Image (cartoon, rainbow, N blue to C red; front, side, top):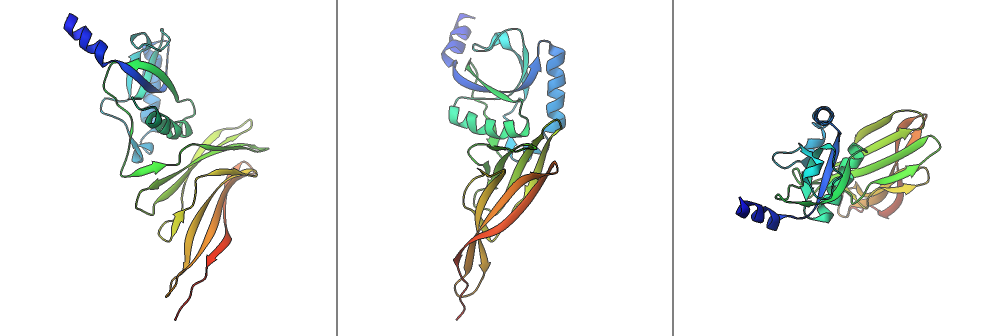
Length: 230
């Protein structure tokens, strides 16, 4: 028994827990877990939880948590950068998700990317007269697939998350989302014509709020090169 406790103590170290929710009773934690199961299927196309997660733990069993709660944990990351990166995605998908620095006595179980999907370093946010927008760009390494995840929070209204399929194939991202005016915008460089020498231009895609709805616009902002044919 003593040797088991010693081994556990030696294995314990700093970790970041990603917490979905929970409450003061096991029943509240079970309700929170049921909400995860209802909301998460689409998200799991881009991020995969470690085996055995999500799981419910009692906060009193983990150093660094306030006792008296039963919480739903999505993962435990021993790399702070990896934990923060996973949190960026989860907080956009569900703003109530939070991270907690703890001493964790188990193996690292950080959420992992699925099929080379990745996302921009941090959530971009902008406030408008109608409410606020927050967004992330998701993309695949060595592939043209790009998706924009945009959350709108309307003043006095509901919070809505929408997914947009962005240009692939002849376009490459030129940067992450940035707040621009009253919207969120990103830029991409696209081939505009193919010949001996291809033409290319920079395009800016902007998401904004109009009459409480997310509006997407795209325009050419710079001609980089013109197509040339022999």
